[in-house]
Structures are given as structure tokens and as C-alpha cells.
Amino acid sequence: MGCSFKALSDERRRKILSILGKKDANAGEIASKFKISQPTVSNHLKILKEAGLIKEKKVKQNRIYSLNKPKLQKVIETLQEIAD
Image (cartoon, helix red, strand yellow):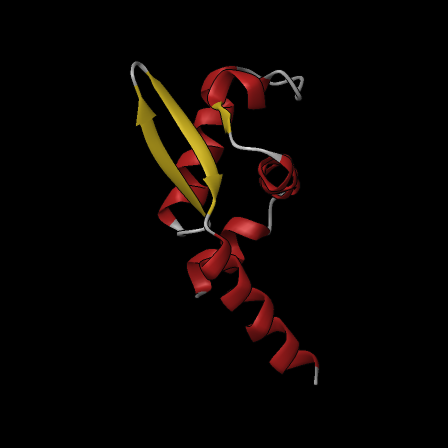
């Protein structure tokens, strides 16, 4: 769970999760929402994927990213327990 919290600590990664909450997207689509390089976005995606917060699916030559909603829900529940 600690890896998830570390991944969420970065504002850009939270924005990526917000983008993916609206629709699945590839790295280029996500990068177009930022004023940073695509390799930097790819690194953020890697961190989110390693934390289990997003999933990656290969479609032909593209990699499509989506939220891992069960894992994200678990993080939310943990935060709720802390807050209660």
C-alpha cells in the first residue's frame, strides 16, 4: 500500500489518474495534457503501473492505460479508515 501512497504524492500522477478516470488513453494522449516531455509522462505511467493504480493493455502497437479501479478503491478505503 505504501507504494500506492508514494505514487499518489505527485500532482502530475494524480492528474494522470484524473484523465484516466474520464477515459482510457495512450501515453501520447496523456502527454498532450501536460507541458512536459512524453518520456517524463511515460515515467509517471510506469510508477503508477508499478503501484498497481493503472493497468496497461497492448492494442496493436499502442499501449492503452486505464484505471485499476479495485486497487484505487482499496486505497480510498484505507484513507477513509485513517480519517475515521
